[in-house]
Length: 78
View 1: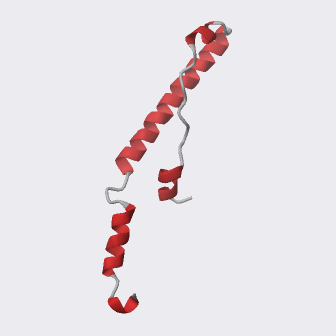
View 2: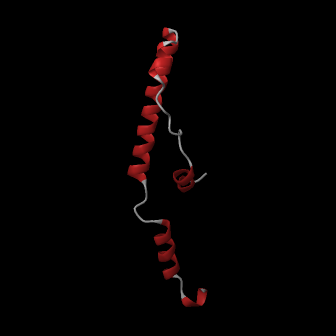
View 3: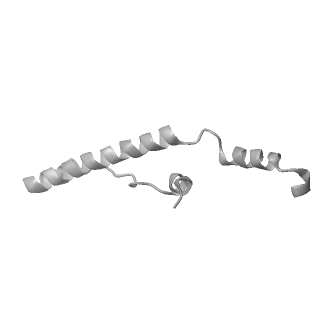
């Protein structure tokens, strides 16, 4: 998979909703800790993905790149 394909179609994780605090309160303490640590992990992954997409995203659209490439072709090549 190319980086462009990953940026367009790939995600590290889907949107991960927070757990219901009322349900978590009924879990054993070790399960509560696991749920909270999992939520923290997913939040960190989402921040990493957001930063990766925001900082490394190409500034020129794919359409613009194609137009530039087509404009560089010589009339004989068409």
